[in-house]
Amino acid sequence: MKGLCILGATGSIGVSTLDVVSRHPDQYNVIALTANTNIAALYEQCIAHRPEYVVVVNAAQAEQFEANIQNSEISTIKVLTGAKSLEFVSTLEQVDSVMAAIVGAAGLLSSLAAAKAGKTVLLANKEALVMSGDIFMQAVRDSGATLLPIDSEHNAIFQCMPSGYTAGDEAKQVRRILLTASGGPFRETPVETLHEVTVAQAVAHPKWDMGRKISVDSATMMNKGLELIEACLLFNLAPEDVQVVIHKQSIIHSMVDYVDGSVLAQMGNPDMRVPIAHAMAWPDRFESGVEPLNIFDVRQLDFAEPSLSRFPCLKLAYQAIEAGGIMPTVLNAANEVAVDEFLNERVKFTDIPLIIEQCMARFSAGNADSLEKILQTDEQARVVSHEIIGNMIA
Ligand code: NAD
Ligand code: MG
Image 1 (cartoon, helix red, strand yellow):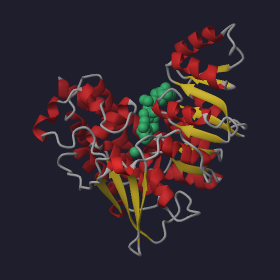
Image 2: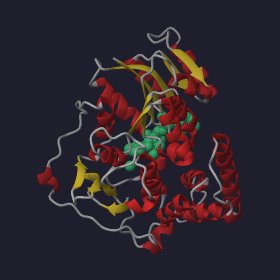
Image 3: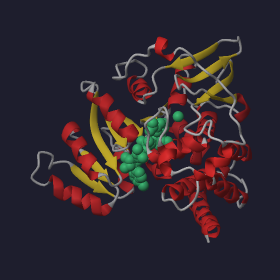
Image 4: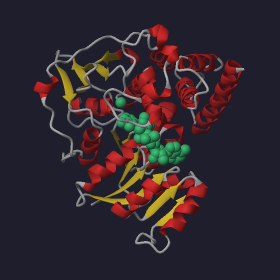
């Protein structure tokens, strides 16, 4: 039995993870579940999975949750609150595996704590890796943690890597990676109409059912930009070794091109339970609950090069990784602020890349040599992004 902590249990990835867990009660024991505010969903999860601990980051909601479980069948669950408690549960001795599925920079410290504690880290929270880069990868190496990618593309690449491959190692005999992208809901929308895009349109992804932030990132293709940086870190590659490929059917989840001309692809229905089950059972396999792929229904697979003028966010991600240092941290923070303000209907869809570009112009890459520097940069870039937005809507 492995002890599991799910950071971000109430989100899209968290819910899919618990679905997989419920199919394998003999293999995983849920030790801790965390949520920010959604205590109604968390309550139901606690009834079903009986964790020892829950963390409700929001203090008022934690108090309410505590009151709700009094005299109930789950009254013995220990309820913690505050961001620090996320680090506490992700490093508990009885926890073997940590599903890092908080969205955004809010997940950095708890994911990093799990890495430092030598846990098996199932990494969905790509922003944590993008913003902390080498510091995160070094923490994994130093502690001997096992890092398994959950992002479907990175999980696909990991599956296509030579057997025995460890995340962060040099990818020997690999010529390049083909990182696939669906192209999101606006793959073919006339560029001159993109400024009219509504929140409802942007979060309606054609192939994947995901949280709101990553759905907007998919629509701008910043998601692929973050994934490009994530791939370079996880697989020890230069950006020029990663080719982004628009593949609208989302059946191939990425490919590895070897020096002998072999190209290995991982395919499957677009359902996050596939990469989640892969990482949870690794190095073995078990059932995920996902329908088998019917290739006769798929019929056709298309591939195209992405347009950087249609998707300026992807171009900004290339610029950030090429500049190096703290620039990916700035890119990520500015994107989080811009997307949040788009979701609040304070800025337009097409303002998102403008905000990020202006924010990046206010920083120099320098070195990202300490966690303090990363956290400070993240904070400063958020302040600058809010300033830019303030001027924009004034
Ligand atoms: P989501 O919005 O559905 O869920 C986010 C989770 O994080 C929730 O449990 C929420 O309570 C928690 N959370 C939010 N803000 C928090 C805060 N300040 N402190 C503590 N907890 C907080 O998001 P999601 O779609 O499940 O995505 C989670 C992560 O996984 C993201 O980094 C995303 O990029 C990545 N990812 C998601 C998918 C997908 O299919 N959903 C695919 C690949 C990667
Ligand atoms: Mg992905």
